[in-house]
Length: 316
Image (cartoon, rainbow, N blue to C red; front, side, top):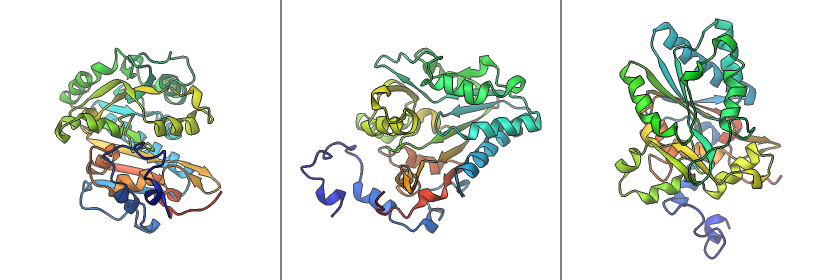
């Protein structure tokens, strides 16, 4: 007896995206932990999942990867465009550490935050609100870098006025020789940024879906709201906005390289992100599962070893 056996007539019926193949999702989660890095035929030849023993290793290794890209662009005298997340966050401390150790400044770096909480019209939280992603980025990354930091004019946040300008700004940077790197986490709903799976119902073709660069006031799935209540709002659901501004596949699928991270462990054997990891790696590209496209791009996906499972019942 499990979810699929008892779904009909329950309050969960019709709650999850209609395009999800639940049997396929369950199959993705059924493999042995040791199989998680086994190469799949749809992966980009330069894509690689990277296992990290614990959250401390995860933060350092992912941060080192980001810092290396900044250093490499500096060495090659070219600009670098980074699409950045607020979640995961622990790697920013290490990006700062390595750049300061190497005395590498970020004058050549242009940063685009991938999303921000909003209302239905795309109006966002004020930058001094502790829940705002702009506040988080200033606190974790820009301010600690000191004199080496990204110039203020190179920092773009997903506001109602800024987000629609992302496609042109990024296109101009790429035309000028910049590489685009998307740094990301993976949501409980398999979203990238806040590009939710239920958006797929609006598009008649995958090509149309892939062309979407952003969305203002995006309607978030209830499980996304609950994920953030747990991870960012100390369980207080009533503080979490129900909408957000977000980039779409028209931007993140342009990436020359990706740096992803899954760090969703909670302690005492509890976690929320193992299914997200396995489905991303095994589902195969499908617009109803946005993260399933990420292995088709070159780069790395760092993950905490515990997330590989086994994803089996363990009462806590």
